[in-house]
Image 1 (tube, one colour):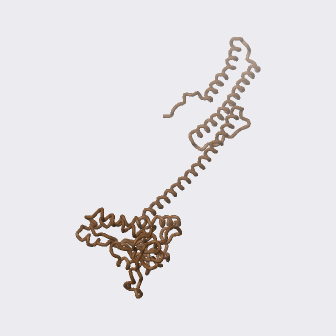
Image 2 (image 1 turned 180 degrees about the horizontal axis):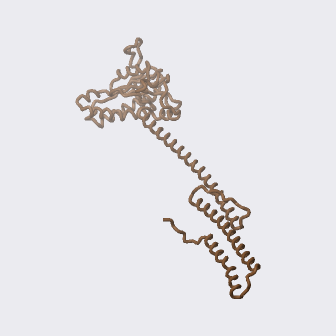
Image 3 (image 1 turned 135 degrees about the horizontal axis):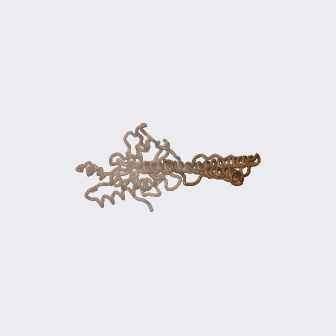
Length: 358
């Protein structure tokens, strides 16, 4: 049901007042004629008629004033409800009060429009900031994902380089590199009488101490082939040369495996690591198909390093001539002899690393 306002309407009050006032001259005329016996004359009729006309004109003026007030009140109510408010047409013929109300209302509308415009601008800025935050959040998630995925394969320095360059994959490059192959000796015999799950757990336990050593000395983990590990070391503009870091990693890798064997004699008895290292020009990049790719090194230096690893006994490190030339002042090494490797015509001179020179 429609609620009836308890407030008195100005229009109804004004019409009631003028309705009663219009009766007043007629009551005077009746009094003059009946009680005072004054004869009805044209003068009296004119006075009564003029009084009625004046009252009627006053009522019309009040009606016009009331209409302006009601129109102004409707505009204010529309603004309060949040609807689009329109300015009030200021009329110079209005009385002072209505003129002031109209002018003040128009100023309020202008300020509201100004604040609404500022609010829209602030909202647009906030949305822009939110979009930027979403972009930065996505970029951070992507970066964390890249770090998480790549850190399992390559060192932290290469991860940082890839993120800084904003690349989605490594490019193929030809460059000098030092290749390291490490094979767990005695692992096959150890795993003969174990369940597959135990074999995998044992293998992972050894790789868990070997892989961090590769990263510690700035190497890139290339692949696992059964119980064999392949790593790539490249020269950087800072720090030690790649061959030096490869031999340092090999020495520490052997020490870590020996310590693991001593602490787990029942599971790791007789397990050692044989390592082959060679330096030369290789091509490093993505090899494979669109479905599956490996980041690896290809070249004669890789094949020679693999042959050296096969020659090394458990606990031995066999290196090639280029590796020896770079590292002869840093490590004590002895000549292993010239070896003719399979599928090679010329013999290759190999060296065995004895210890590090302090």
